Length: 210
Image (cartoon, rainbow, N blue to C red; front, side, top):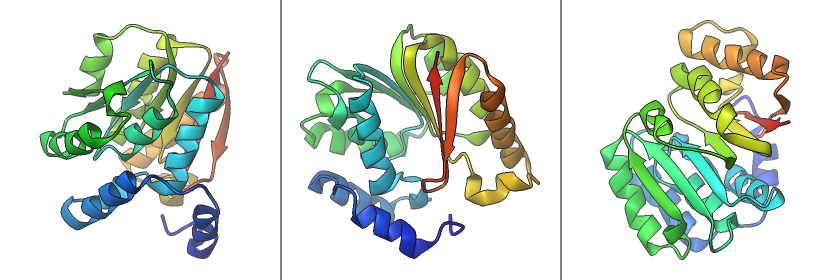
């Protein structure tokens, strides 16, 4: 994600509200012990996700791709006491990691972790959801989007992470990049939603269902 100026991103991060100490510890342990720690969404995007949950008054959130739990805990922080977040992942190691922090968080009671392929999990769920956050295997991005659009309420949001894929979407040359580009184009033409593709971190594509 070096295509975004590090000094500018650092300035934006440092001038945004700090995350709770629990999430700082989660970040440190993720970088110390997990493979591909860069998958963690981080402070700037995490605070944005919390704010989006609050702005739309979300009470039901679906997350596709949990990793170590930073984004799930960030969004749960923005949910009301009776809010609920279902998060999906296929990695039992990441699940065990996240569960420790979910158990420690005051917002952990709002989170339900589902282990298994996300498309299988989605097939067992019913809407409406207020917000869906997609941050999982890129080759299924279009499939995830098409599966969740019908489950999102009118006025609800779908947020897709890594939508710029280190800038490679400008000239897609591999399968993952081509799928992300395909999804970005699909969303831009999808009359079911209004959208904006943000250049925050690795790109965050927001689609508001009409």
